[in-house]
Length: 584
Image (cartoon, rainbow, N blue to C red; front, top):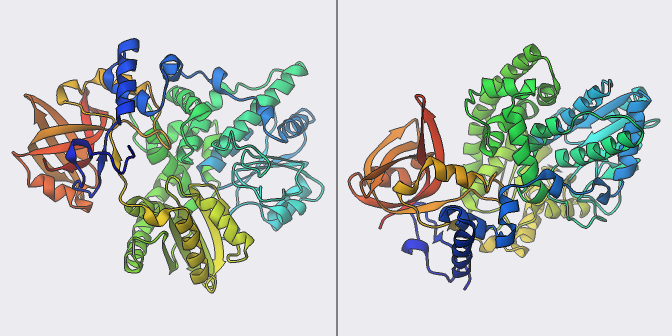
């Protein structure tokens, strides 16, 4: 029985947010029951394991993922041996090294990994991050030529796979590319291009972000150093950077990525990185970091520099050991993030209105406007994607020049389609990966390119997508929502891309209290069987759910969402992050 034909969970075919609830199928329910009986783990946790397809014999290893068991041999990636040997030689011979990085979190964290590792060997590398507006994404000819004149080795991280001309311009210097973006049919003239998404790779490690690729290079570099009798810098202490980049770049939390993030969160909790400590303090993060904080608290602040400020602020923050410098950089990023929110709100309102006028049921949702800041178009595209469950592209024009960003949904490969537009000459340039991509085009190219992209999205089934089903792991009652249960569910984490957090339905919950907090959030108290549970629904009043629940005080609702711990006034309580509701 398919998801489309299965009976709606709890009979909810159309919730207050217009979604259909889907619970575990019979096979998953049987697997969860077997896991519960054989492992002794809580039924709720076993439901999550069953949904993830974890077999009985693999449950213990899944709940305790070990990096040493999951980390692949770096040499499985093409050019890795050459790249690591060149980096080691440059360090041992104390050559001049430059790191050219992208301006987002993945690029900044990748650069910081290399800079910190090289510093451990007594080498101080030059950091270069291009300006988003003046230089655009990736290496450019003037920058590479200038760096080559003053350096022996240029390491491009989170960029470079498609930069044929800029890398050719790096006369007199070797260039090593460490990237994860989709490659073309030919590679640039670099000494080495290490990229799991090269056209000639098998794709087994295609889920790595750039920082993951850099970490593998450093593993191999340390191995080569040991072979020569030299002890390399400690890599485990750098896993907080890998975790940050993996989550912020929305890399799937599967396989080795899951282990990298799990261990990286532990390292981050030790507060060793001066920059991350300053950023967490600036954001008033007073709990142990979780994947959520990396993606929604720390990541946006680091990105703010590349979006609307100085592009190197994030990488400098992640690289510094100076607490005073870190505090100053974190303060700048905090202010830039506030400014970014204001700019984003204005562009989002205009883009949403335009997309709605064009129609939100097309295979591609897109909008373009004059003066829209290129640093926020990606965020706005993500918001449109989330609201419509469609691939979305948002483009800002400065005169005749447009720069845009797109975000996709599961099962629709946006990066390959935009790369195809570039190959067909319908846009000036573009590329990315399955879930996110960037592009540049002229005003005359806009309408034909979007029509072509919409057609490519339709061929992948984007036009047939309806509102996203809400997938639930089972039923839970307030008496079972304990801190111990939350702790046990955390064992199956971290949660994020390709590893959604556990969501449960709480049926026939009495709404004891409900009140608006802030501009659009709903705070409420639910009860059943004499047990109460606090809940928070963020953005509830942005749609019909807030008013509908507010009108149900004293009446029942079916509630659905995620359990989390709320720390307040020295006490820790479980609360429900309400994501959807339905009327019984």
